Image (cartoon, rainbow, N blue to C red):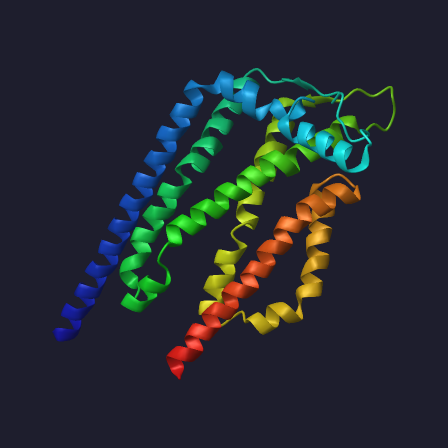
Length: 274
């Protein structure tokens, strides 16, 4: 009889967790939906001045690169004069679908801090008091790193890629008439992927707490990580050394910060066990 009672209590507890999780998901989805509606309301402005802006030679990244190289080398060869890209729509509902997609991902980015907060509110009761103290500021750090990563992708990786791919030609007889869906897919992929990559310090912190990663391990494979970073940079950026360095430096810095974080976690664990 007692066994049946304990099983019922465990089942109720599990169902209560599912109910709590359901409401966290509902509130997160509602926040994303509201932000998406807000973005959709200003879609014309967002497309003209944000989404399509990197294909203009007047984009801020191109102007900064032009001024910087002119000052340092006196050469203006990196100044962008034209990006011969024409965006076209070849589907009846293509522009509307694109508007909805951009609204959703923009809403996700804007609501990301709240979504992380909801996830944290669900996980926090399962943590011990000392674990809660050690993860203080979790929502802030996860959110700020993601936002910085998205901005890094938008202001650096995306314009470099658009400029290179827009000017690349196998023949002068072939014009770059890019479908709207292809351009949006590239934009979303680069920005969101960059935001995820910038979560590296958080991932290392969690793995270090679990004992799966140590600072000695990360230092040992530092050279290997640099090669991997350069390889990834070569894939997502134009094939020139300047672009690869510009993209690689922040990621390498994140790796070094992650080593420091892992060492800090290890030190605290050793002091605790002493």
